[in-house]
Image (cartoon, rainbow, N blue to C red; front, side, top):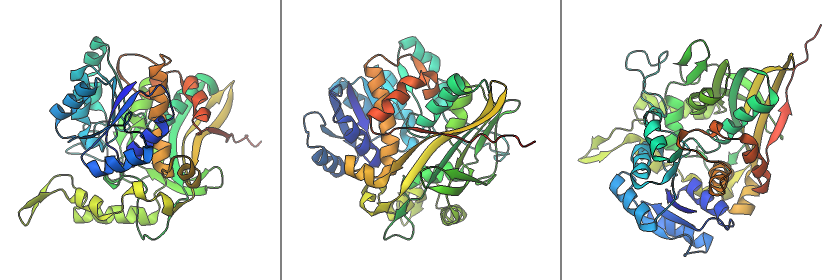
Length: 407
């Protein structure tokens, strides 16, 4: 397989590191706006032939297409912030390459009632073009990270193998990670985190369809496995709620994230001051986006691994009926930061995200997964993916949380 990797930040680096030992990965072009960053990653990989470096401006669709043609790639892997999704997605279509991302095209809140009604939903732009991709025999595999991605695979597995009827699917994400030396240092892209956490969260209900609510709503305490423990989680906008109902029958779908009071407080302050805005403003003659300034002021998550301690957990909680009895399970994957640093020299959050697209590439390359159109992870056989998780040193777990009725 020949891949154009657009973006060599933390997750991009981890994708390359996890893919490197795989003999089926013939070529992976490390393309980034920051060439020094790409050079840093290439040096760590120690393979200039299979991992060449290219400058790319993800704002320029023509440049993306030119690089894809130069290397005759089979797949364009989008590993940059989702603000660039449209042009990367369209570039893949134009050059006849398959496409994969880990976050779908961005939403736009309802102009009049953003906390009850949806406007433009996550991925609407891509799904609107699904028939065009299908006609050309091309595949756009969208939302193929950890959440969305692995969590969606778990949802499909629950439907196919664990339940006869599903009442609710809830993605639940929590961690006990500590970062030494910083009062505030997100372990993932702050640009993406702001987008997810300050947009109106979306919920799906079978009889209502998709609707929105207030940010950080419906707090609940969820107990995460493998020593992480109980963490308060809240509603956050996320792709799983848009993807799961397209292929999995459930009465309700939610996404809740364990942010913590400090993180929520910072996000609320950024919003209050207008520092979460994506639109550029004039600052003494320079045009800058406030959110880009915030990102520039914070440490790069890709370089925090040696200062991080603890574990992060991503998973899918499912409640429903099996053989006439109530059942409740949590399918999950826990990544320990020390293990990830030892194996891939990448911190846990980015490594846990990155192994999923690499497994998906593996399955596509060997014809185990396949198809055409714009498809989410739920559209494929989940067992084939989950069997490979242990092979990639990211095994999944299953906790049976069934509460027996008390007479």
